[in-house]
Each structure stands twice: as structure tokens, then as C-alpha cells.
Length: 175
Image 1: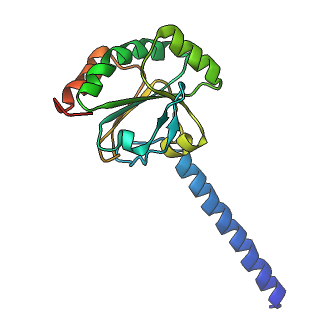
Image 2: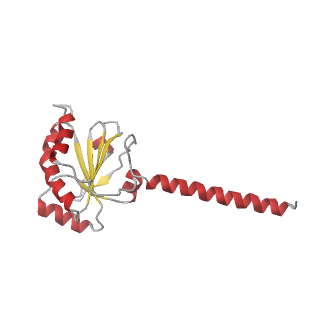
Image 3: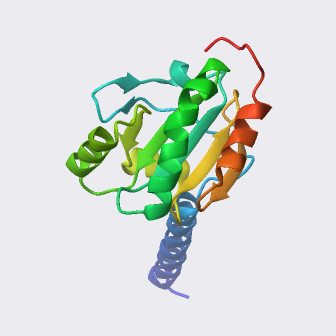
């Protein structure tokens, strides 16, 4: 067999193998974070200009909520999160909300109108890579002090469910 045919076959298989590897990597990043995954907290800019860094979340239980201004279930859940935030933080927990809206101005207006105090960041490519594809809003992740996702809840949670998370936090832990 001539050498150029072998070279073509090798090149052909190399291209196929490379494409399969790229597809695998893309699909892995498209999967949403799930229980047991580790979160490496990036620096994040909140809607009001604060920078949140890894030390803000390390060694804390973190409730992460993905939401949108147009989502009626998110609106209901946001009321409860806003009420629970001081209690959550008094026990050493942290709350982070990530808006999946396209327009930051709409999010800032919504938060101001509702007088919500919880930190909110806009979803971006880095967060999409970190948390994967979020299929529904609201979605809540509970992340442990070591960065491990402990629980994932898709859809609106009842006030009692959110209180249950609060009750599970150790009491009198400094934040």
C-alpha cells in the first residue's frame, strides 16, 4: 500500500478522534452541576458593584439560586430568600443568587423595586462552565463548606423547605 494512503487514513482517524474528544468536553460542560460535584468559586461582580471572591464562600454553606425576573416562581421564592437571608448568614451561611436574564439593567431595576438585599450576579460564560446548563428556574444548589454540591432542587421550593435548610445549619457559627 502506498505511503500517502496510510497517511490519509491516519489523518482521517486523527480528525475523527479529535472531534469525538471535543464533543465529549463540550457535553461535559453542558451538564448541570449535580450532587457531589465540586465548585471552585471564581471572582464575581454583583449587580451593585461588589466583588465576591473565593474566601467569601470557602468554609461556608452556600445557597445558590438561579432565577429570572420574568419567572413568577422565582418572584415568590425571592420574597422568602430575602426574609431568610439574615438568619441564614447569622448561622454562617451565605446566599448567592445568579440571574439568567439577558439584561443587567432589568435585574438591577427589579432588585431595587423589590428592595432585595441578597447578592446577585449575572450569569456569564464562566459561571455557565462552572455550574453547567441550568434547565429550569428557580434552581437551588446547597454547596458545603468544602465546595461540594450537597443538594440540588429544581423548581419553586416551599417556605418550609427553605426553613429546613436553615435549621440544618450549625447554630452560632460566625460568618
